[in-house]
Image (spheres, rainbow, N blue to C red):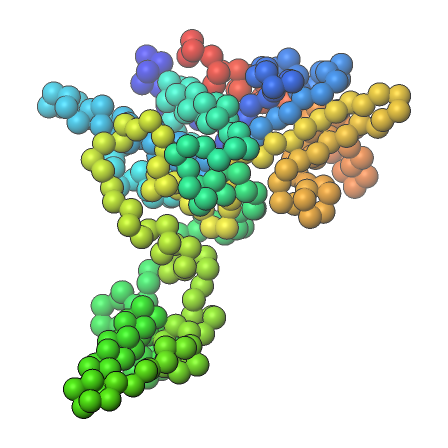
Length: 335
């Protein structure tokens, strides 16, 4: 079978490692030359976040769809435009990419990592910068499908327990109605010959609606952040663009950041071996799963007191071999 038609899955290796990038003094270096080599004094391994991987995959799928849009009849992309924003479909496609597609995705991610500088880039606003550079863990239930909205259900009742409007008032509509009422009252008073100054302070505004904190969520589809990101964003017809747009981002629940960077330093006679990370867990606790990856896979010296009968050193060698060979295949152009 032609390699272009072969579907290849990478068993027991998530995108966390498959699309990771190792650098030594800022220079990209193959995994097989670094991981497990105890003579290497220092290196940094860059793990792409799920949001970063899915965003690049979505753009890869859109580019493939557009490439085939002008193709002769009978030739079409195997991707569907609606699937490029569907997390469940993206998970499926990520697991079943063909070798050439896997390599193309790796190249896209590698370019993004090289451009991941601390400075605010010319095409970025503050929101885009935080999505790229901030670090916040993903929600444990991020991959669960979003339940259907109750308010959009056919024949659904508004309000709690059948009470009209309770807990479901539109904050924007309430404010607009209040302002309209204020203007009407001013007009009436002006016609009567005495214009009254109506205070618009929050203490005289109607309490009904979204003035309670719990009714103005930050995260989620109905949250303030979502409204801020959606406002004024118009889709264009072309997916070819010099810079990634805000609307291209695949936002996963709670997660911020494009790359988790874990650094290893062997130290010298005066300094001990040091492993650091820029993820949220390390910032809070001083330790994280990424540090364990390096401790176990690279050094092979983690103290598994309760796993003494598991022959973990043999499992480590197998895992290390799998990472080295699979990552080499993803980087290689001869697939």
